[in-house]
Structure formats: C-alpha cells, structure tokens
Amino acid sequence: MQPFTGSFTQQEPIADDAIKAAVEVLRSGRLHRYNTVGTELGPVAELEKAYAAYQGSAYCLACTSGGYAMATALRALGAGPGDAVLTNGFTLAPVPGAIAAVGADAVLVEITSDLVLDLADVEEKIEATSPKAVMLSNMRGHLCDMDALTALLDRHNVPLIEDCAHTMGAAWNGRKSGSFGIAGCFSTQTYKHMNSGEGGFLTSDDPEFMARAIMLSGSYMLYDRHGAAPAPEVFTDIRLDTPNMSGRMDNLRASILLPQLSRLETNIDRWNARHDLVADRLRGMNGIYVPHRLEQERYVGSSFQFLMPEASKETVQQVVTGAKALGVELKWFGADSPVGFTSNHQSWRYVTPQDLPKTDAILAGLLDMRIPLTFSLADCAHVADIIAHVVARALQKGAA
Ligand SMILES: *Cc1c(COP(=O)(O)O)cnc(C)c1O
Image 1 (cartoon, helix red, strand yellow):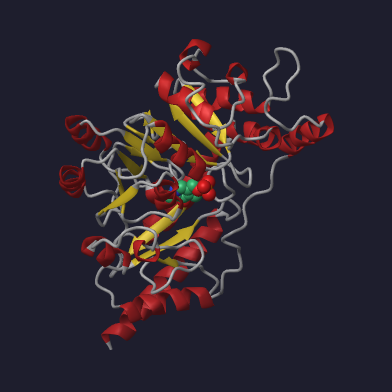
Image 2 (spheres, protein in one colour):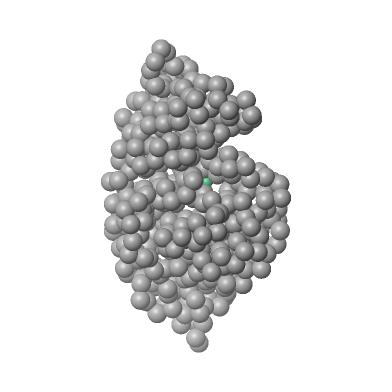
C-alpha cells in the first residue's frame, strides 16, 4: 500500500480577492470595527449583515472566537455560579470552557453511537438539575433530532444555545443549524468552515438577548454602528447594566471572511463530495460502524468519523498506528490522554467528574479525521483504502 503524503492540517490559501480586501484595510489603518467614516458600515458591520442574511437570523454579532460567542450567550442569558448548564459528554474543550468562563456547572449528557445527544438522558438531567440552559454541541457536524429536542426543551421551558462550530451551513429540514434556540454560536478559527485564524459569530432573533450580547462584547455605546443589531431603543434599559467584556472582531479578519461567505455553499458541496466518498467506501465494512444521519439533516462533511464498536483497545491502537505509518492521521477519542485536538470529559478537571458509561464505551472505539479541501477526490479514495486496509489487518491480528 502506497503511503499518503497529504497534510491533514493544510487548509486552502486565502483567495486573492480576500487578500486584496485585507490589504485595503491595512492601507487604511482603520482596523478597529468602530473606526468608520460618516455613515459607512465598516467590514465587521458588513459581515454581520451578510452573515445574518445567510443564517436567516434577525441579529448577528461578530466576535473574537466561537468560545467567546458561547460564553457571551450564557452571560447574556444570565447564567452564572450555581447554575447548571447541560452539554454533550462528547465535545471539544471550548464548550465546557465557555460554561466554566461564566462560573456555571457543566452537566454532561450521554451521547449515542450516532454521536448525538441521548435525548432520554437530556430529559433525566433536566429533571435532576433544573438547568439554566442546554448548550447543544453539534459535535463533528452530527445533528440530533432537532424536532424532538426542541419539543422536549419547550416542555421543560429550558433555553437552547447551539454550538455550531461544526455545523456552519448545515440545516435540519431546511432550517439552518443555529436557529433552533435563543442563540447560535459559530467559529471562524482556521479549521472550521471559514478561516480568519480566530473569530466567531453569535446569532439570535431575540432583541434583548442580542442587545446584552453586544454590550458585553465591548461596544462603547456605539451599537448603532452594527450591521445586524436590534434598534437603539432596545439598549436603553440594558446599556448601563451590562459590563464590557471586550471580544470584538476587527476589520482585518472581517475583510477576509466576507469573500469566503460567498463561497461557503460551494465549499459545502466540495466537502460533502469528499466526505461521502470516504463514508461510502467504509460503510458496511466488517468491524466498522459509520454513524447514521437522519434524512432531515443537511450536513457539512468537513470531517469523518467511524466506530469500531467491538474492537479492543489494542486493536484500535493498531489501526491508529498503522494508519499513521501510511500517512493517515486518525484521532482517537478513547486514548488514555488527550492528544492535539482530541479531549474527552475525563481530561476536563475543572468540571465535576461525572459517570458517562455509554459515552465512554462509544469513545473507546471512535476514530475521527479531518477532511481539508486541499485533498482531491483521488486523495480521499487513497485515504479510504488505507483505512480499510489497516482496519482489516488489525481485526485479523485481533482474531488470531
Ligand atoms: C472550535 C470549536 C469551538 C469554538 O472554538 P474557538 O476556537 O473558540 O473558535 C466550539 N466548539 C467546538 C466543538 C469546536 O470544535
């Protein structure tokens, strides 16, 4: 088997039109979002307007990161010390980190082998903890049954915040991920669906919630210079009561994101072609389970996951090592200590330890890989062949 030589962390370059826009901002010297002239909307406000239109939300705040968007959403909801916030037992560290940022207690919910929230456990934990909110993490782009979840949360009157770091552009029944609760949180960090190095968006249809979020982001009372903000009168009772916790996006990042937004739909098709090629090759293979997606789901295949449900730790380790030797980087969420971007709930020591036997059993056999758009379809076929090869070999060894 020929080794694969592509890089799993190599994103596409920033396109020339975005570079040109960035150079214009640099030449102007006006990098701060409120450094505008007359009635012009600067790049950040333009981006907020464009992203709100794309998302179909009334309001959008551009900010410094996805983690900042999540913590700001929790603060704007009034979550703080003593409050429980439910979130997925399988997600990445910025999610429990955002809950810790407001001093609330993360209550971890079990996941299913389709990598989505276990709704029965959501209900049990709502009843046990009366949470201030559910922070749903659409981890690795897998959407749970959004109709069932929203009906459940409505019944218990618990607000929903969506972590859409992996579902920017995704939808459920034609409705964009991030528009099912009070807030959607997005990241424009390099490995997400748009790339400004760091950055994020918070979207909402609730005017008072968004006014608080804008004040929190550090708007210096310049909220009338936003691109998708509630009317100035909404701020009257809020502006002096809401602290400034600076986390504004700057014009340089916004200038490179605006042209990327117009390419997002095309890129989703490109990701899905790559993802589906790998998934179709491996689905049904002996020893492998590829998470099932509900038909209402429009996903963004910027990464690929599969489970080896019956495999021993040794066998999974052999797959990881064998794939690596052939140039394929698989992340294993069941490893004993976190490596790179993998982390599991046991390594979040700032969260009260919780028993998640179902989630732990799933993570023990869960393998994950990025699919950068720098990979061609032929590259993806090659990667899938390598995975099939190392899995078959490891299972043979395990059986012997
Ligand atoms: C990347 C990511 C975020 C947000 O990350 P930032 O680096 O703060 O922009 C949130 N949730 C998940 C699951 C992520 O992968």
